[in-house]
Amino acid sequence: MMDPSEFYPQFNDEIMRGVDQYIEAQARFIEAWQENLTKQADDEIITEGARGIADAYQIWLDASREWIEQLVAVAEGEELNPRDIRDVWLRAANDSSQALMSTAAFAQLTGQSVRDGLELQRQRDEAMQAMLETMGVATGDNVEEVGERLVELERRQHAVERKLDRLLEQLDNS
Picture 1 (spheres, helix red, strand yellow):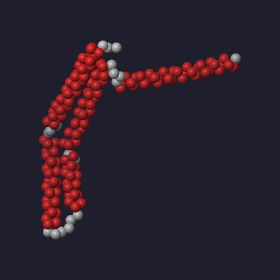
Picture 2 (spheres, rainbow, N blue to C red):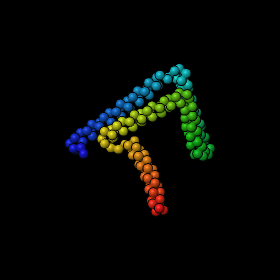
Picture 3 (cartoon, one colour):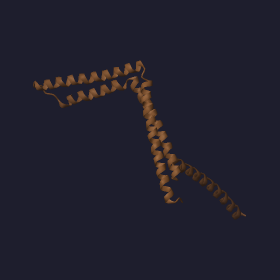
Picture 4 (cartoon, rainbow, N blue to C red):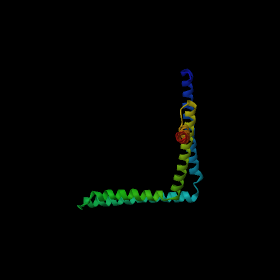
């Protein structure tokens, strides 16, 4: 067993190393994301993305006009169901989201962001595994290995028990 005066400084060093690795991984993720934005921003993608933004903006302007028309109608004495007003904004939210999300630019950036996020998660998991191993704490890999060994030992034990039962049976029959 490690002396506490040696353990805690080592423990703190490992935690700080893990935090540093995590911060570095986050910085790499942000840099990759920014690089991806500029690298993949060819004219066609930029044009399509801008068109999607313009379409979404137009949808909100149309919803605002429709809402104002409804308010004017109410002011003139016409009855209006509050659900109709709500539906204008819900429809605008759905349509504008669809206008933005249906562009190749959005799909490309989302795909790259997901890949970068998964890579960051993998790096974080590796750093955490290394930190836990250094601290002497069992990791998921260690537990899996012990589990596999236990299953193998149990299988062998059953085989030995079956052979022992056969031997005992033969002794009883002789």
